Length: 146
Image (tube, rainbow, N blue to C red):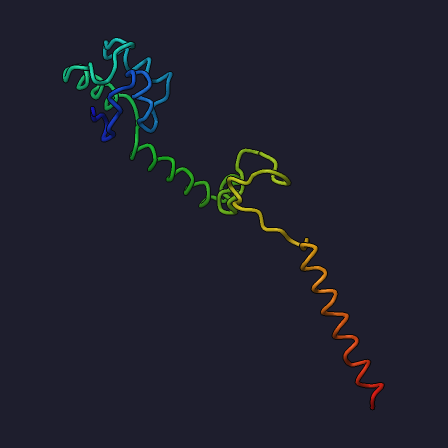
């Protein structure tokens, strides 16, 4: 496996697809990177020479924020939004969708597993009703016997 920007990219895939395994590099950036590194798009990673890999690495290092640096910058931006008390920062703090999505339904990815409030299963409802009926009957029968 070739190692670029600290990431092992798969040997069997074409370089166009394999470079997108690096966080911060998408398909459109891959085209720009390969053009500036002068590497053929149709080559597979296993067919790349060491020189081609080093040229790709130099282009990525010189012009793109990837992996740890990019993740750190994103986290700092979110922290700043929280600190200044912006709407987006408050949504991050409340663990709700930030970009205007609806939350009445959906938003399960952000909010987590459903927690049912106010609805009971039929069996539990029947047990509760029987329990309440038994409690009301018990004191009534005791008072009649006295």
